Every structure is written in structure tokens, then in C-alpha cells.
Image (cartoon, helix red, strand yellow):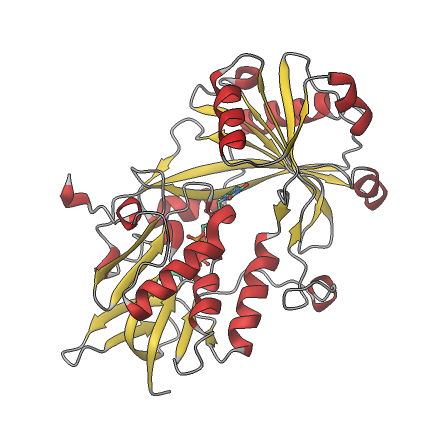
Length: 373
Ligand SMILES: Cc1cc2nc3c(=O)[nH]c(=O)nc-3n(C[C@H](O)[C@H](O)[C@H](O)COP(=O)(O)OP(=O)(O)OC[C@H]3O[C@@H](n4cnc5c(N)ncnc54)[C@H](O)[C@@H]3O)c2cc1C
């Protein structure tokens, strides 16, 4: 196997993006180590698109709503205008009703459509596409979990995996997401981050129902304590029906902000959460909310999905070097999907060259350790 120039640990959204960017340099030997997500069949993934033949991006816009006169609304409008992002303002509710005939949205909200390339991505397909391009560019991809990393005196790191492989690399990049601290991997075990339980409801719909709603954009409604939800939540997101690896279509709804008692601190708690059915209050309230917003929605089955997310104190990801040969790109703050390709690019560049290649100040993304408090 020899010694790699860069070993990226964690093949999620940040790690797979970093692998694609790092492997664009043919003189570098790069490997990406991480467990595969549940597989997607070739039929699903080989829909023609400009990126690795894998369709993961659906630019259907995003419908944003907040209470009329609220601070959320003012901040959004200011941000959109400052960044000169074109948007469709639905001050006239009739226009909204005509455009999305299947939606019944309360008049107390002001809605607008971010139509400038916004939409949604399928994270599983995105990761597949990044890995496929990285592999074509020469990156070695290992479906394995890293158990231990040891820095050898010769400035080479030894990476030991669950399948008892030993990988040697001159540089390491940790992209281990919410699991960053749970494996007790020495360089990243003291990162300051909190890990939270998340519940979403998946409403299964038929294929004709998915077609009927095919123009539906993701909907985000900002309102504290929406429909009696815990005060820690700040709103709700509703994704249009999307095909999942089991080939069925599900419309997903979940809260923004954390649910009650959401923090977890051990791997055992995380495992227990993944085998849990989720917060029943969240599922009950949000599925009722969806039925009010899409009154004719025909749901054949409802199920919950439990996941975890992680937050940093700055609410920005860490993209930083711990030592000249060990870097980190982690902590998505629930928004990682929107920025993962750029995080991967910056992290790959920083790992390989030591340079920060962005107009944004590097200081915004510096790691905070527990002991820095
Ligand atoms: C329910 C839910 C809804 C979300 N919705 C949105 C949204 O609407 N918009 C948005 O922008 N973001 C959203 N996010 C957040 C987004 O998914 C994350 O921010 C993003 O995945 C972070 O990327 P990451 O690479 O840091 O972590 P991940 O994508 O989780 O990847 C980390 C990877 O590291 C691997 N790993 C961990 N430890 C090891 C180890 N020791 N050895 C090898 N591999 C390891 C894991 O298996 C995993 O594959 C959502 C998240 C959840 C849970």
C-alpha cells in the first residue's frame, strides 16, 4: 500500500468532498477511509447529470416563510438584498396559491421563493458522486472504520482500522462528523462540540402522488414554538417527496433547532438513539402540520427517522490544522449539506499546502478545544 500523502478519515459529506478536491492533483497519493452509506442501486444513480452521471441536485427553489413583521423575515430580506440574490416575493398570497395549488399556507406568514439555484440535494447520491470522481482521479477508497491513529517518529501517521488494516500517511484529515469524539481518536477527542438527537417524520407517498407534487420546493417556516413544539425549536422544514434507497417515496418533515433533552455524550447513547423510534411528540405534531399545509396529501404509511447532528460554539464548521500534518473539517451545525463541497475544498487545500484559500477569514473556522474554555 505504501505511504499516502493524505489520508481522509470519514467518507461523509465533508470527507468525500475533500477527497475529490485533494485527488485533483495527480502527484498526490490520497486515500479516503470510512464506512459506506446504505447502497443505492446503479439504476437509481446512473440518471444522466453533469456530475459523475449521478443526479443529486434538484434546483426547484426553496420556499421560505416567517411571521409577517417578524425579525426572521426582516433579517432574511436584508440578507437576500445585501447578497443581491433574486427572489420571488409572495406578498400577494393569491400568486402563491396559484403557483402551488396543492399548498394551503396560513396568511399570517410572508413567503418568498429563493429561486437562484436553491433547491435540495440528495446527500447519499452527493457522497456517491464525490467518491466516484475521487476514485476516477486515483483516490483509494476503503470501506472501513478507523479505530486508532498513532503519529510515528518519522512524521508518518499509522491508521489502524476495524478490519485490522494498517494505513500509513504523511498527513491526516479528520472528517468524522458527529462521531468525531466517540472513537476517542487522540488528535480530535478534545474538540469542543455538542451532539444532538434529531427526529424527523417520513410520510410515504405513492409514485403518482410524488408526480403530483413534483414542483414542490423544500419549505422552511420559521416560527418559535410552532404548533406547540418544544420552545427549543425554531421552525419546521418540509422536504418534497424523494426516492429513498428502498425505492419508495417519502416526504420528510422535521423541526429546526433542537428537540427537548437532545444532547448525547456517549457512543452507547447514540447507538440507542438509532434503534429508537424518535420523539413521538415531534412526529405527531409535524405530521399533522404537513396534513394542514398539503390538505389532499395521500400518505400510505408514516414512520420516524432518528439521526444525530453536531454543533460548535461558533455555529460554524471547524476547518483547521491541529498540527502541520493533522487537520479537521467537521461540525456541520445542521447546515453542513449546504456548504460541504466548499468545506471539503478548503480542508483539502489546507491539509496539503497549509494555505487558506478563501476570502473569508480563517479565524472564523478555527478549532476550539474543551480545555480552551
Ligand atoms: C435529520 C437531518 C437533517 C439535515 N438537514 C439538513 C439540511 O436540510 N440542510 C443542510 O445543509 N444540512 C442538513 N443536515 C446536516 C448535514 O447532513 C450535516 O451537516 C453533514 O452531513 C455534515 O457533514 P460531515 O461530513 O461533517 O458529517 P457526515 O456526513 O455525518 O460524515 C461523517 C462520516 O464520518 C464517518 N466516520 C465517523 N467516525 C469514523 C471513523 N472512526 N472511521 C471512519 N469513518 C468515520 C461516518 O460514518 C460518516 O460517514 C441534516 C442533518 C440531519 C441529521
